[in-house]
Length: 94
Figure 1 (cartoon, rainbow, N blue to C red):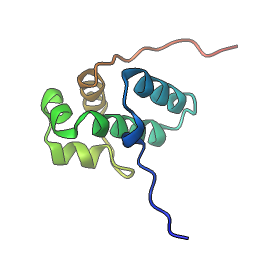
Figure 2 (figure 1 turned 90 degrees about the horizontal axis):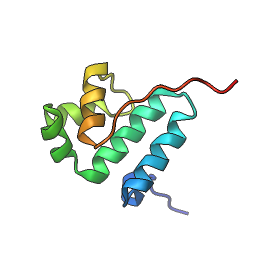
Figure 3 (figure 1 turned 180 degrees about the vertical axis):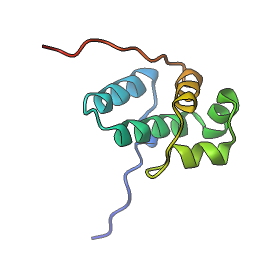
Figure 4 (figure 1 turned 60 degrees about the vertical axis):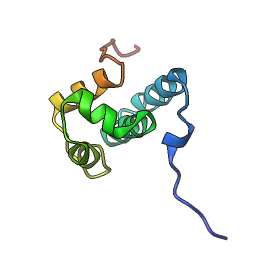
């Protein structure tokens, strides 16, 4: 049986899909998973467009959002804004 790698970006068609996907990843608290999810969303929207809006190079953005990337917090904020989002902090449930 032949398998293919899963590419979540192919299934993130609406803004609601993207938000639900990112929120589900955020609930894990896994920074690498969250970073990967942001990369999937950027890929779904068009990596070149997001890179331009965030003011970073496309290749640099691919590298930053890869599994082994290590983007700065500033880069992540710019990408989140380019994706049409904002970062919000809420208290943990008791």
